[in-house]
Image (cartoon, rainbow, N blue to C red):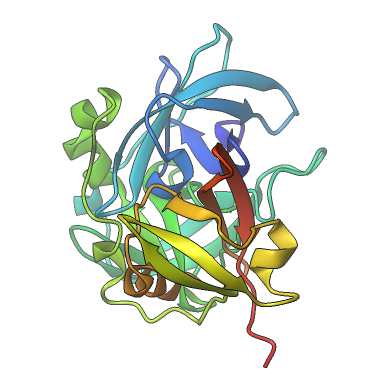
Amino acid sequence: MPATVSLRVGNSQGSGVIIDREGRILTAGHVSGEVGRDATIIFPDGRRLHGKTLGANNGIDSGMAIITEKSDFTFVEMAKSATLKKGDWCLSLGHPGGYKPGRPPVVRLGRIQNLDAKTLVSDCALVGGDSGGPLFDMHGRVIGIHSRIGGRVNSNVHVPIDTYTRTWDRLAAGEVWGSVFSVFDFLKPAEAYLGIRSVMDKKSLRIESITPGSPAEKAGLKINDVIRKIDNQKLATPDELGAFLKARRLGTQINVYVQRGGKAVSVAVVLGKRSD
């Protein structure tokens, strides 16, 4: 449990797990985001250390970060996906809703529902803030990293641990590759709502209107903001934005990077439900 940490990068936060004595942290690609960003690693006891984001495979949502301060910390062992089978018991750890002082990582018990080369599905419950946290086997070894809440509460998606070991050198070297959409092709998540109308503006999207009371308005997005990217994905058309939102569920936090009056602004938005 001490190796399961909260990972804060900019205005976003998720979970992660320390995996070796060098302080490398496995997390979700949408949590680590861009390479070389400052990160704050928060331990269950409240201790905080500085870190940096490393590489990411957006195609399967795997990411890596590293602790940059010298300190003592616990790390955990990785399993091998070949040892896993459908029906195996597993434990999910993370920081649902974000880190809360005095609360250790929350543990949930479940079983593996499905497993292939790119995805592991379990019935361990996940909520916002759990993304990037570890899924353990009953021997205390990491078997996956939380990626996305599925279409049902009891069907959630994790990145299998073997995908990290196969691409370890690329992640550690700070390489980013893959398309963010491919990992969600087999899921139909519950609809998430942002509340903007956008139009194409050269190779970006400009916010033309914002629905009153919507998640976008509550978070502070403005009309005429030019969206450069959301999380780690550049979106050039309204259709691409629609596809991005369909891959997310209610309560998911996204980070919208906009150009506003000559300034670069980052806005954290928690996706909500359409009120009509």
